[in-house]
Structure formats: structure tokens, C-alpha cells
Image 1 (cartoon, rainbow, N blue to C red):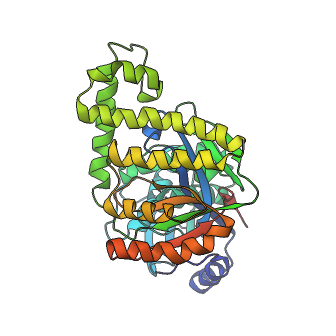
Image 2: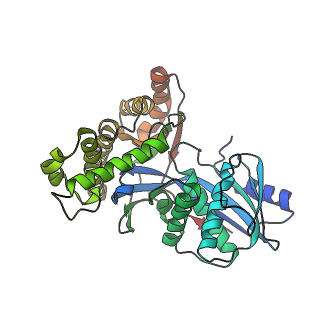
Image 3: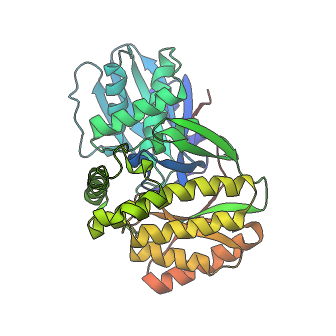
Length: 392
């Protein structure tokens, strides 16, 4: 499977080959990397992601027969279904098309009168790497489907509809971060998001001096769904057990580090560990914003490092491969900080790397990682990119 940096030309060409016309609309919606604030979003907490240059691209034109004729360049696979006569269920051998179906389903549920359409999609976001290819596919779909009927969706509404599609159609009880950053990302900024209030602030990243470097463990992620649900349950249990002492709390977001230390004895050890990660991670996000606004990359990096240790020890969602990649990254002089990013049990790490250290990182980290795990790593260097946009 190839991940072209910019598939615009190939997308346009394939659309003309398949459908004999130029697509009326072309959109892109980026993947994301979360700089800090992991597993806090479903606890009403704070996150700090950036949209990345890797995106899902989609080209489409309307049809007048109520048919959806879709084609995925990455898989060389077509999918055809009807707007009025398809079951709202997933198709096992066309996983990518389930996200198109999901977005069409939720838009129809919301009362939008969609037309039939021809669609070609292509992705440069590596699938299964924790960089949110699914959310970007949903956001791209929502943007292009609504565009074809002359509707303009507010980016926040677009993100919420994409979240609902993934929860209610795809069946994954996701938080809002991935859809939010894909829809609302801002070039050269990261987005500080309050996932309870759905308020956000675009925080400028330093204009020069460092790169965001993503390294993929290339380990197929296992246990993510079951362990994700277990962690959610453990966090909810923590809230229930802390409520007698802290009656006003609704989620772990409402527990301060001081309150947690005072009352953590009320929690069983495992639940205590899970809650400690969430409480301290929210605090780290807030401190990291302060550090970034002061251009203190050393402090920001130290908070990233602390985040990984908490995810590894208290939340237990890391794995040997992620830990090896983080450790290899930290051996490079000029790496401010490195941590796992995403749900865990595989996927990617993210590092902030000084410009002068990027070449050494690319040369030495793969060797160290291969020596530790026997696996190869794929390294992506990115800048913070703009959120979803219509290009034609």
C-alpha cells in the first residue's frame, strides 16, 4: 500500500478514468498526532493535538439515481450501495467504505437530503498507526457529502457528526479529539481542546528550530478495543468511589492533583493507578500550554517524557515496542521529549526534535529500535497542518 504525499493528481485522474468526468469537489482532512493529553478526552479532560500533513483526500460529483459509487485508491477496491436501500450495518470486506456509509447514515439521520454520488478516496495517513485515519475519513466524507448538496457545516458540527457516526454506526465509543482536530486544525499551531466544554484555542508553535517527528512501531495494535473499554470503566469506577469525598465531581477532569492525593486511598490499587494518570495528565497538558507560550521547549519535552512514563506505569497502555522506540529517541541529543501517542499497545511515538538533530534521529533511531525489537520503524517528519478544507 502506498502513501503518496499529495495524491491530488492521481485522485483527479482516477476519477476521470472511472466516471468519465472531472470531480465537482475535492477535499482533504488531515490525520493528527497528539502532543500530550492521552486518554483524557473520554474523562472530560484536556488534550493538545496537531493536525499533520498526512491526510485523507476525497473527490466526488453528484449522481441523480440515488446510488453511491465509491472507489478506494489505496485498496484498489470499489464499493456500490444505495442511499435508500442499504442496511445501516458494516460490510466486513470493505472496511474503508463503512466510514462512508457511517457518515451518510448520520447526515441522513440529521435530516440532510443527500444526493447520489461518485466518490474516489485516497489516504496518506498510515492505517492502524494511531494517527487517526478513521476520523479523517469521516470528516472528509462529511465535508464533501454536505458540499455536494450546497450545505456548509460549521467545523464543530462536522466534528460532532463524525464522532456520532463512529460511535453509533461503526460501534467504537470514541472521544471527540480526533474528529475535532481534523476539522479545526490550524497550520503551524496545535489545538488546546477542553473536551467537556468543546472550547478550543489554537496555540502557535515556534516558527523554527524544531520538527515534529512521528515514528511508527510497525507493530499491529492488539487489545486496543477491549482495553480501551476496560480503562473507561475503571475511570468511571474511580469517579463513583471518589464521589462521597468529592460530591461535585462528574468526571476525573474535576479532581485536582491535591484532591487525588488526599483521597486516593478510597480506590483499589489498579483503579487508583488509572485515575492518577488522568489527573496528572490533565495537569501536564495545562502546564505544557504555559511552557509552549513561553517558548520553553525543554519544559514541554520533560512533560512529554513524564506523560509516557505515566501511560506506561499507571495506565498500562504502552508495550515493549513503544517503550523501545521512546528510549531510542531519547538517546539522540537534541530530542526535547518523546512519548507514545494514540490509544497504545502499538502505533506511534511522537518526539519534538531540534532541527540539527533530525538527520541523526533518522539515521540512528531505526538501528537502535531494530536491535531492541527486530522490527523496522517508519519515520514521518511533519509540521502542524491546516484542518479539513475544500480544495475544489
